Image (cartoon, rainbow, N blue to C red):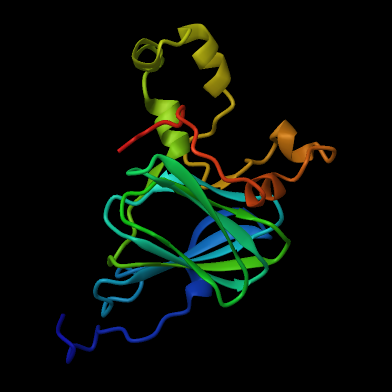
Length: 201
């Protein structure tokens, strides 16, 4: 980077850089080297969530992620690939959870107006999404590999929308079911190590 160049950028308004928008209360803004060209090995996602909304299960193949809670509260869940345990960390303002590079994880908002900052040690955060894995892995491969009924698998993943980012997606029946126990509460109260979790990496 030529720091004497007139094109060198030293400030940026992240509010003007939407990455994904579900609705007015659930969206993600991005800052990386494409937005601010003097950045080196750092980037961030500015995440806004309402209760029970989830940054879908995913992993970052090129970066670790430090999740900082600005307001509200969220549970950050991480699959440790060495212990095969799913770890849950509920964070509130001023607290962080660290996700090592390549680890499967997701975040669930416990309250409305949750604001998280996800900081990465890479100039642009790359991501592999659970929704894309489910939707684009051929059904016959999933059925053969995991001893599943192929037709049942197709029916199960049919409602999955590729690149969901923030779930449940609009129109999901589960989202409208007010009687359902809040998913965030279920995760904040549990700690488990299921053997059936997909091990994608």
